[in-house]
Length: 407
Image (cartoon, rainbow, N blue to C red; front, side, top):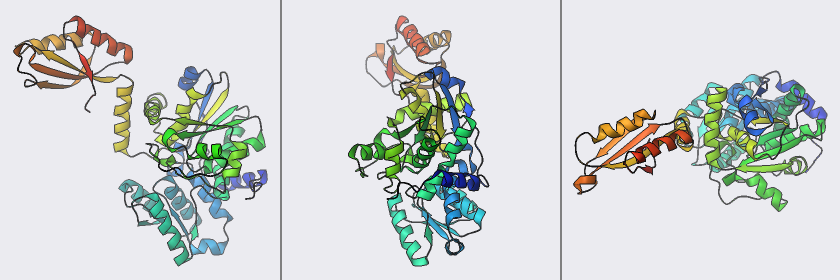
């Protein structure tokens, strides 16, 4: 493996080429996360990039390095997500054919969006690995050029243009946080950052249950995880790229792993404080902020993408509200006689609880004195307000029990 392929000249060339098609996503200073962490936190919003993710950069630069003959043959890749749209968009900009193999389980919106950029979509296999295998087969049969999502040095070089933009805009940056799936983005960003200023710390962030790069770095060589399980689907990778691994070994300073539940509340934070939709993989670097054991530093979190379907979004919001104690459910047992519901409602109302759901079950017990179970799901301002409402119910003699909300 050539560990000197990604030179500063190459990154400068990539930046010039990629700038023709990509949006220069300007850093967003975050008062909210800065106050929370004691650092100056800036967000690099690649969720605002064309196609909703950074992947366009690597795909476009990769296509630029191909010969006219290679481009004329057409491109092929396998992806269920952002890489598919990045390759389709870049191919359209170059006026060449693109075939994208996607698993049959890919949401229709992603299929249609990929088609909207002019790509031919082939649905094959239940999972990414099967789609990828089939894409290699089609590439061989039809003489198409395969564009790998991450295990390609030219693709990684294109992704590294993000670091060029960050450092030009914020030359005094101390830390750059970068999500890791297969490692293409982390390779480009860390390699260029170290070339421009070796003092910059570049920290990779992986989902706790899909930390293939952390495992590989600990082993000293590329390893394959037996399984991955994370809501951060864009970084759910079992095997990191072997071509890019030497660069990661040399240039990544540390890896932070994040549990899925931390991503859920980060989604709420981004919506409420920055009015931005960021997908779970892009939230890894936001969740990692509180794991950084530093103060007074300038930190950039790369938000890698914002492509999240609305069903997932609503589920994440609901779970986030529950985690933050902004929605909770209590069960109370009431005597089976008129007027009890009004008493409970009065206590909740006096303490500014907002009832959003009531379930009234008269058949929970044959004991007529505690024969009715009332489940109340309500909104609160947070943990303190929730505790206040529960205390008021206890003082009213209702013996509330916390139960999991049914949303």
